[in-house]
Length: 474
Image 1 (spheres, rainbow, N blue to C red):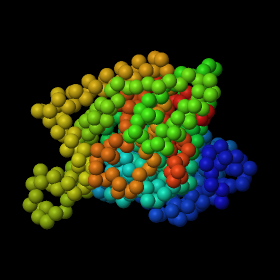
Image 2: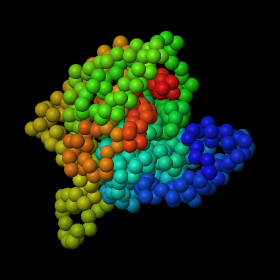
Image 3: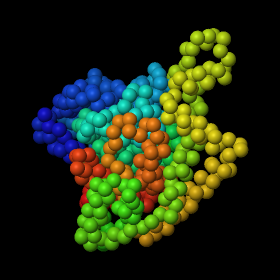
């Protein structure tokens, strides 16, 4: 069987009749069956995908197929797809079935994409290793003793292992880019508000972004192009016109690129990653671009700001999961005599995993009357300062380059006992979410153990086209 790594190669073979959508789906289903040890999918839509493939084959024959005919994707378990289960990797949503389809997902379906299944993720997208899922951890296909990154770990491994051509994940602090880096694939986080969040189960509403994962910059660009744009169901989505990202070109002049000095000099960054990043910098310089080191003075405040604000928003967003309206309800002995407050407490304690409980507690503390100004208000002020510093940086430069992660994929269980070490894995990715700018992670070689290394590029708001163009160039 042919293991397709780009949509253009799928389209070429469909056109010449070397393969049909139905055959393509069967190949993916076989691969999913053979790689169950990776624990990528929480649900596979086998019969439905076969039916959909047959329908798309008929449309291709009739010349009426959409732009994504022949693309087989998976969706992260935080995106609503009508009449299908959605669990957000949590027990609290046991047996819950989505009542409607997320706008981003619907737009892909309208262009004849085939959805093959729902992908494992950290519970409520909270995590950097995909070890926080109620469905168990996902394993990295490059080395099954390693994590795939998180929270979109299942989505990244699905693309890495050839279980579908692309995936749709979500990125709150690096959850698309960090697993993309750990798995050697491409992950794009768009500008905040570029893609509607309608139908995305919320973690932190002012940070969450839906983003694609694929093997090539062209494929993530095409998926973004179709998902992006205004939506009457989401008041935070931008009405800026959507350009043809996959056809965007770089300006016909040398680029001005800043790189994070800490990314190539800090001892806290793995040597293999420092060296790989330096090689890319040298390559860009050799191509005639201006590439200069910069320091972000507020870098040390990025993670604290991010975690105070996201946990506060999570505390508020997750209050709806109470064991009363839907999902998991505690069946502890004596439920009949249980008062409402006890039902809430027991249902939420039993339904949420340890990391989600930790973040809800942190967020509730940060929002409490005694500490609101000391933590939440202060973090909002620092967020504004970080945004201002980033704006000043992009007045001088076209792009900001850094490693995507400080280390390659670490071993399963290595950081679970130390939340702080786990949080530090997001050090390079959170800035894009704090300021709402677009960023992409692309493969940048491997280390001595063959583990993938990623490099991150960040651009000003709504410059996804030039971001993809530089990613293709590299």
